[in-house]
Length: 97
Image (cartoon, rainbow, N blue to C red; front, side, top):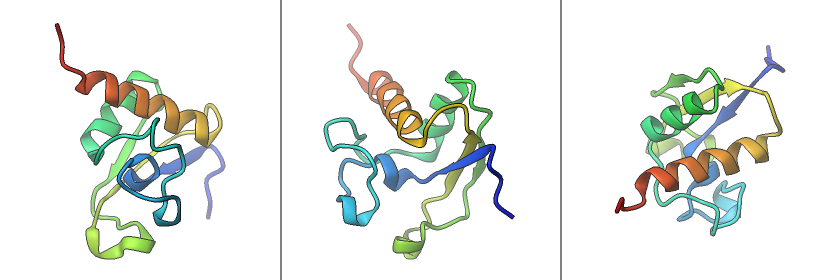
């Protein structure tokens, strides 16, 4: 049964290397270069989205990759969540100094 209070975040949704037809849900400019589950989880924690990881799940269109997924509380629209996660991940990757 679908949980309306939670939403699934697949790494492909924010991966700037993926095309829209491959599953990317935000612009390439806003996306992250090969996001990791660990990074998505850390960013979701910072946003207070209570993330839970299912690391052995596979994104159906690319089932052979075994990317895993993160399930978060739905406190805003999915697009808003994806953009905020991407911004936090890109910010944490930026060279400091």
